[in-house]
Length: 372
Length: 124
Image (cartoon, rainbow over all chains, first blue to last red; front, side):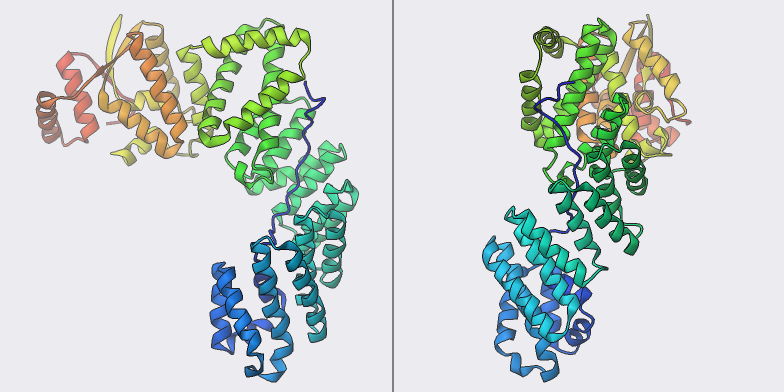
């Protein structure tokens, strides 16, 4: 296996993007905001814009409302101020004005504290942290997200993202603690399960990793992140066919992956090529041909999905790390890639793929009735 | 060499391992590939196969299936029969007399025209 310069790592996912989401989360968390909003038609309209995701329009409206804060009930003003300011932070985030957004979220933490709304304050801490993360200031981000979870220990999104930040900083044990806390609040959180799996992989505890990843896959068979990480576990356990199948399942959801599938395709190409090279070196050409056909079909499919460059890049990386002996086998592989054309093999390989995707319980006869 | 007219269900069942007719369909396809059996198919069968696969499984798989069929056609293992006005008139009569779906009427028309058995994996 060529993995010297091209190691693949387990991937955790911080799903809760900071972009334009703070005000929306404040409505969820703040105990008083929903009632305040419902009592005023201007705020109802603002909420509608927030829910539509129209951050710029929502911010324009929020700035107007901030200027006429005195028109609101006096007892609501203190709370409305930080809430409306959050939209400024959201808009600046959307426009990639990270430094400015960070300042706004910092001000909001103070205003929310003055208003006595700890939960809104935790939202501002969290999004301030996420903005720092966006700027690759992981350590500062972690501190800020930590403040969010200390202020609101039930903030599941923040707990998960804290864990992912800890993983990225090479602290998988700490990450596991954070995911554990998230699961103690929301025991069926699939994202926490997958991240837990990823953290155990990075510690080399593959059995534990499998347990968590299987839970996520049982909840959603198409979960790309879970399947990718499970593939890594199976590869470590030398279950190569099963590992390849997991990677291939993850292809369909590559957009959900943090790097849009770069690592996934590299891992798959590396696994497939190393297996093909083994078959060629042991002169098992029948199996090699079958695998090459499968590789050919999947790479063609990946290329038409717009990820041809990822595949080519991964193949180049594999080639550059090969030994002299492996290079000879690689020439055989390249020749076979050009020439192998056996209809029954192609059919068999297509059959495997079609059957994998074919809906359970659907007969050919019923499928054809749908066509007629 | 045996010759038979086959409809879409034979090719599709050959791709769906969970279907109860899969192994029967695969035996026919293997015979065809070994040139022990010549498949005659109406052109609509190819269109129907591609359409079902693209709708249920994916466009790439549908293209792949079309590519393999072209491969068999090139090697004379599978013969595609195109539709024309005369065949249409005959198929219309068959559809009207037996109250059949269009694809079934077209397959029966071809089998009758060639004087060959029609093989299908669907119960009709």
